[in-house]
Amino acid sequence: MAKEYMSRDSRHDTKGLFATLSYTSSYATTASVLVRHHVQHQKAKNALPYMENGELRVRDRFDRQRFTSLHEDLCNLATPDKCLAWLAYSYRRDWHFDRALHYAHYFMGKA
Image (cartoon, rainbow, N blue to C red):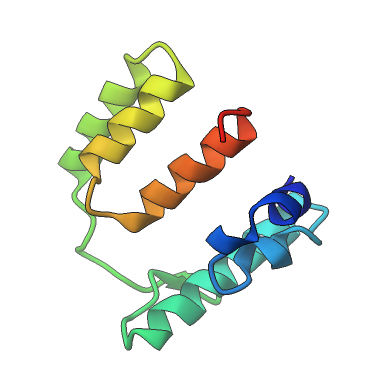
């Protein structure tokens, strides 16, 4: 799917992430690419990656109560569109979710 996405709209590629994903063929490879991208991105900002080399690196920055509440809200929504809209609202300052929403709309044929 990433290969097709890249052929139609490569301007939303994040430092080659989708281009790289377009050549993956397994869950393990895809997960490895995503984690490697995360580590490179965090280190470029002089920030500690959340995970690296199979180890959770960041502690005490995860709000369990907020996550539990968000999870419960998402479980009560009827459609993927409503879930994406709630995520975008809940994390409206987070460009990651904006890009994820853009990709989801493409995937569902709305872009």
